Amino acid sequence: MAAAIRNELRFILNDRDVVLTSVAPDMTLLDWLRLSRNLRGTKEGCAEGDCGACTVLVGKRVGDELVYEGVNACIRFMGSLDCCHVVTVEHLAPNEGRLHPVQQAMVDFHGSQCGFCTPGFIMSLYGLWMKSPTPSDFEIEKALQGNLCRCTGYEAIIRSARAISSYGRVAEDPLAKERASIVARLAALDDGARVEIGEGGQRFVVPASVDDLGAVLEAEPKATVVAGSTDVGLWVTKMMRNISPTVFIGGVKELRSMRDEDGVVTIGAGVTYSEAFDFLSRRIPALGALIARIGGEQVRNMGTIGGNIANGSPIGDMPPALIALGSTLTLRKGTARRTIPLEEFFIAYGKQDRQPGEFVESVQVPVPAEGIRYAVHKISKRREEDITATLGAFHLELAGDGTVAAIRIAYGGMAATSKRASAVEAALTGKPWTESTVEAAIPAYEQDFTPLTDMRATAEYRMLAAKNLLRRFYLETSGAEAPVLVSRYAAA
Image 1 (tube, rainbow, N blue to C red):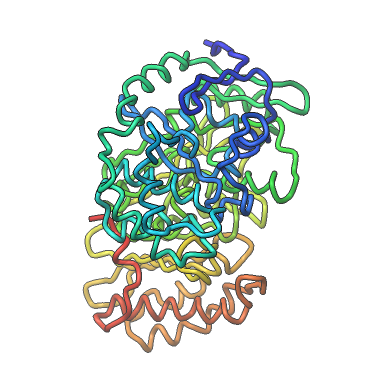
Image 2 (cartoon, rainbow, N blue to C red):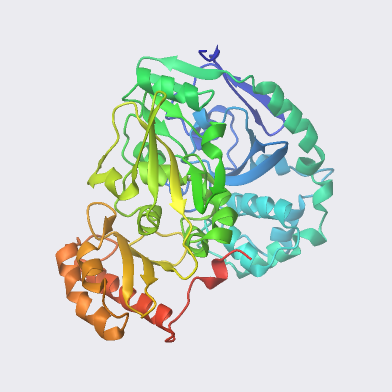
């Protein structure tokens, strides 16, 4: 049965219901707040989701709960906000002349100098405070990975974060007191209908369900599919590309599921990094550690694993890590599905095995069996919130006699797509897992890869780093000492 159609976008902004019948598919939340609502506390610093000056909170219903997350308003499109609660820094207005606890802590501990980035820091700390009223230094640093300050050096901001609860209690905060009311209001806005706004070259659709998404893309096979917009947002803000007609899938509930059956984790294409973190960390700790280094908190709250696969970027972090695990991908067109090995999805630069009207529905990830050695290592200029120069993922099965029974090695940033190191794998398979075997296999990298030089790394550096990651993996799996740089990011 066809979904009912609604020609208006509905959400709550701070304390007011908003209904829009006319909004462009490429209108960002940042521009709408500043230009249409005169809410100018939200700043534009980079327009690419990198600096956090535009941070706002977006609340969404997850079952019977209401979850607030910091997001980058500069690359968050209006069409993704149906049935959400948007909270800006203005909502923390003084109550009876008193600043909000987050604001007062920033004042007293001198967390602001020029002030441009301050609203974004306040909103990130606000989101953290609601989840963890007495956060550890690690939690504070993680929450602020996506916020850049060019004045204070961060120490004053971290002191502010430690002190927030001395100025007030989370239970007394308006977002806590009004939570049940907001949940009821959002539920009333959600009528289960498909949203269609605009026409011609300025049109977007918010499907009502995964079945409705299949029908929409069959009718609009050339539409731009937007999940978290952490990539597509830059198509608009940096490349000025036309993305209409646009299909926003972030609200499709069926795409946000995760399950673990018979040793295989199935992740819906709409699951964000933040949603997947705990789930994957418990089952495949190396993936949790990797997720903690993807973007900042705002990017992880928006970006999806399915989107990272679907866009086919050669420096996408998740594909090589999942390829090394032997993952498969389920694609859907209308009601028809097909499942392929994930590595076969990537054909060439900018080209994936996806037919017109077909979309990524889920990825199936085998959990490493007992005794399997698995690791992922990312190389980037900054440790946090940076794009990969190269990333290596390793999956090793040793036979009882210590020889390599099977090995899968995959890299990002070394070719036009995420790619297996097939020649290196062949050079290792059946051989003793020893330093001499590894060194003898190193020249095979020249057969597998011809990396490029760009702003992130030279070709020579990438090749050397890729080879050294195999050496590191050997040291980590042979009992020899090697630095472990990601363990503190694993979930407890």
